[in-house]
Image 1 (cartoon, rainbow, N blue to C red):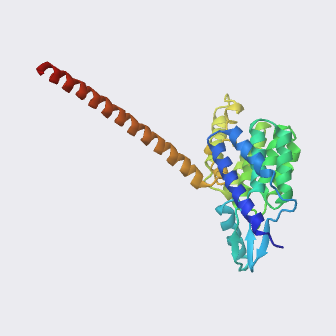
Image 2 (cartoon, rainbow, N blue to C red; image 1 turned 60 degrees about the horizontal axis):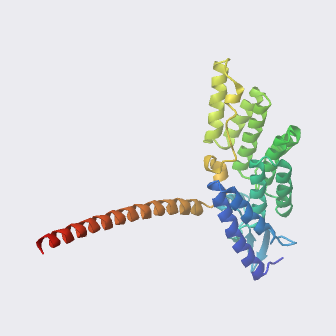
Image 3 (cartoon, rainbow, N blue to C red; image 1 turned 30 degrees about the vertical axis):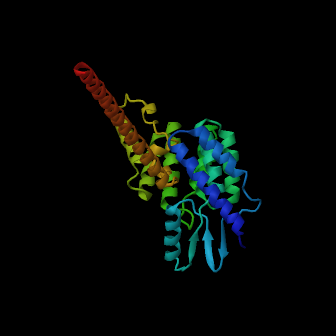
Length: 287
């Protein structure tokens, strides 16, 4: 199956809008992000192709370079040699981020609706399920969430070790909210088997240990992670295009530099004006 140039160009433009929406989420401009994403999903084609062959090349619409690198690594381990072209994803990511935003605002049912639509057009991506599980937890449907977390347990071309680690991390956090500290601790350790340097999980385990040592401590002190703040979560930051984050930081730096230049210029003009007044006064005294 093939995609037309028109469709490809349209998705490329919409992918840029999704990147801008991700940037808006990063700086907590949620209304701007939602507006952009709602605009994008209106362009979702009736038949969406996540992967297709074009001129002998396999084209896959990965979300980021991490997905691309994992897929290539997986194929290499299977002894498969393919020429892969990365086309930037737009519509699945847009649905994902809309679900993400609705969870931030505790609109869990709406979140599930967006995530299910995204999952329908890209059923191989576990990120929809991971986010849906959080919405189910918000609705107190813990057993349904648990089934999702337990289903993401095996590496595949579209499931990386980070996805499995994330499923275990979120499973551990859910168990903590239910007061099952022992199983939560065990699950967190399993998560570290897949992603040993996950600071969020390490921090949670340290807090659990402190709680065990200080039995007067409160469980609520552990439940402080907010996985909906992208800037504080390295796993979710991988969904963003780093160049847009860097661009935003550069814009901030440029704005600060520009402001400093304006202040210096204003100071110089004020100084020149003062000198001009002094010179005029002196001339008038001697004239």
